[in-house]
Image (cartoon, rainbow, N blue to C red; front, side):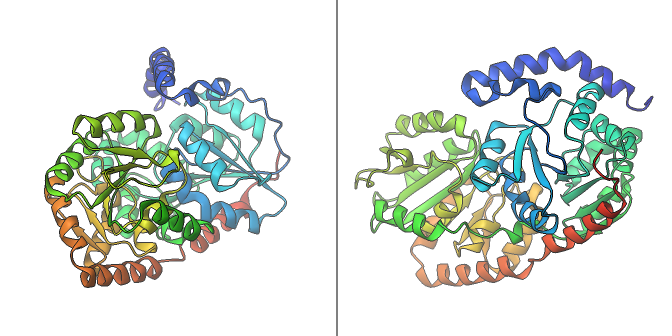
Length: 425
């Protein structure tokens, strides 16, 4: 408790600012103003009898959790899976992925104070918990340990940059890592960094994102997109972040011939209108996916203002520029593009997906280009080379298929934890 005391005091002092920030974000994204009580451990929904808790912060973690959630439902058919999130987009993504499945519930995880964490655990009484990737809350994990709720960290990744940040607070990091019952790491490098911080029972299980399959409607939706677009070649800028769109739009306006269409899909939906204004400021005619109309010949930018359709965007594109990698955000998952055979171009900043990006480049499925300007130019050159795109597409399909099986290995790790877990209280 003494180790966590400064951390807890900081949370108490920061809580009014956190609430103000939540209200401010709610002005741009109203979803933040819904279910406010859940962020303080107050829940209206009735808790099921047998609960498996899976925490997925936002969109990326939620999509990564999909194969594991389905495996959990199959392995423990008498249980309900409770998905917790921190963002409205994560919550909406889980609704889209598990639409109509009454055995999957969702809510917000409360802020990391012991009173809120305790209220969450008393209400739902999970048999065990799974935290996706790197979202570690010291007070929550301590509360789980006190109540004998085993928790594993699944699909765990820890970049060198993040490891250095954790290492600045060695006692708190060791205590937090030690509260986990087991860790399934994506790579041996991730496992080594986690172990160095005090984690125990760390296994390399691989990256669950390789097990994500395109939704059943992907082919039909991609065909609809192509029908809307017509015969034009499509350059996709996928999951772009704040600041990247301006760079990519500048390069596209200067370098791309009028017959090339830029499909631009921002990472965060609250930025759709802002990105539309960026295109207009550059004199680029724009249409929105939400208009559901044929793309006019004079349209230069097709704004992907929809949720849950990324596989279809990839499948309908000729080349994909991966967002988050052109400025130091750490990159985004490129496995989805490879899984549908779309050639990939990434920027220099892929530290959150370092192993995946390097493997994709090494296999010929992706190119790394150092600037956004040069990245757009490289993508436009690829559009002229059908044979090279075909080779990259084949390499991507092989790459995406080669490393599957992480879900099964994670489930095996979880079964050992579940056997030691007490019955629902």
